[in-house]
Amino acid sequence: MSEQKKHRLLSLFSGCGGMDLGFTGNFICNEKSINVAQHPDWVKEKVNGKILLSPTCFETVFANDIRPDAKAAWVSYFLQHYKNANDRYHLDSIVDLVKQAKIKKFKFPQNIDIVTGGFPCQDFSVAGKRLGFNSQKSHLGTALKNDEPSVESRGQLYIWMRDVITLTKPKIFIAENVKGLTNLADTKAIIEHDFSNACNGGYIVVNAKVLNAANYGVPQNRERVLFFGFKKSSLTKKAIKELSQDDISDEYNPYPIPTHAKETNENIAPIVTSYDILKDLVEPEKSNDPSQRIYSKAKFMGKHCQGQTEIKLDDVAPTIRSEHHGNIEFRRLSAEHGGTHKDELKKGFAERRLSVRECARIQTFPDDYQFILPQIGENVPVSSSDAYKIIGNAVPCLLAYNIAKNIESKWHLYFGENK
Image 1 (cartoon, rainbow, N blue to C red):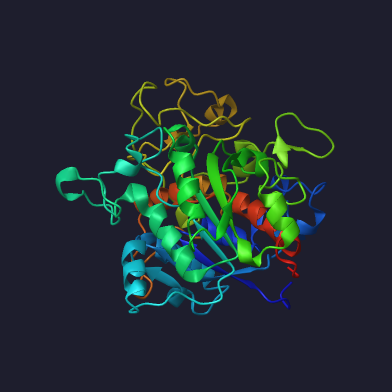
Image 2: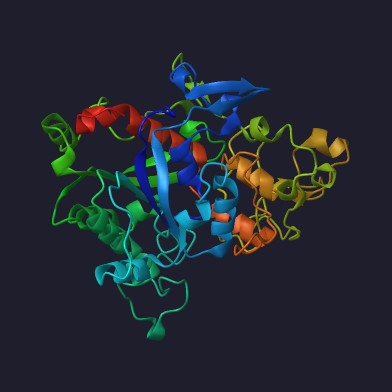
């Protein structure tokens, strides 16, 4: 794979890099997270109950976000892949970049094969005010003047992603958001229609679908909607016909088939539980990992408040949130507060919330992806509060890997060329 030409990926709303890492591959994950019955070729190496995943045919040549802490984490990890990692990550608003590109003062990379982007989800989430397109936040996250809706608002940043698609003309684009978007009036249909107008209607946008990360080896109940678009002029005639169907055949379907479920068979592996992913971690006070030593000290406020439950060790974890206001879920509660992890309580383990590393593992980031960072060069230090936020904002790395490997396996069908 390393000798093959890499397909050039432009990443928007990149955050700390969950989607980018998934589309790169070559990272370590829990052995139970990979269904080798379906995908034996995904295993590059097995090491001490972990799997080093095979690399993909994609390379991130451009990443973008407005969060300095997200860039710091991204650069810290991707320096092992790209010597110029810092230069590949652009710390600017997508609105400003597009405006500059349209007046020829900025230029996106050329010959882009794929654009990805998890455009901001706060305005579509059931946990928020659900203002959708009428967001009262700007593209920089600040309040809009007079609370007037604007195409530059946080809720309409997918339009600017569409503009980047028009400017770079990738063969494929993939956009991601929360499941709540699909039941907010006709939001999904509007976004599909708007994306299809990129390059003057030059893209086939397939019917958006909700995937649960738990069905792809991620130890978390995390549902996200994905939008796929394909450049018509690059597709084979057969691919145009197949992707234009309401019911796309498995051979051409861009959505990866599930690998894990609670009800298993010879082709479906059991879900990965919180215990599977966390059992080998020592308690924070005994750890040398800065991301494991840090956890929120927010006190138990009663189960009527958000973020006051403990994770179930025999099931997937709840969704790791970004806007948690310190109330990240508990790794364990005390007996007094209704804790159920009795074996751990008998050992004298203290009540505490999930650590930064535990949240990262639930999001399937490898342990060499560091989130508690000192200042490195021009990149800002990353605090525990920032770390929780950027991890909660991320696409689970392993979900992204499933998407990437599915697209990789069908590249020749879509475009009549080798992977």
